[in-house]
Image 1 (cartoon, rainbow, N blue to C red):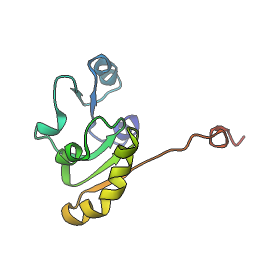
Image 2: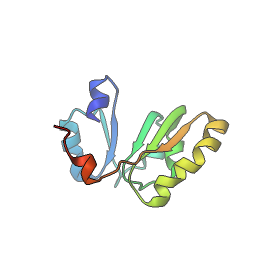
Image 3: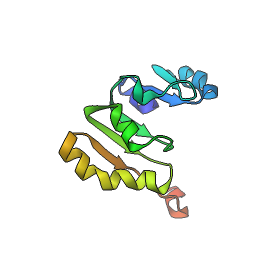
Image 4: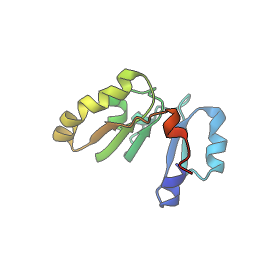
Length: 115
């Protein structure tokens, strides 16, 4: 979020009620309380959706994505991470949207500083 903001993007974050003020304090442009609103059905479209927890389905995210937008999933269940990888060739060919997953490793060698 902070990198996107620093690069000049307009950022919308979907979060629980208790986190909304903190997000606003970080300078987030728009916040959506997922306990009160269903972001994928309000008609708003996004260039990029970065899903970090997997609470919503791929179809929900694609519904809120611009026709040429990109959806990146990280976190969630194995199925929620794997589904975008399998679906990307099909989705991108048919719709122009891109769906993918991002997985980061966490090993001791990755955590060590090179210094």
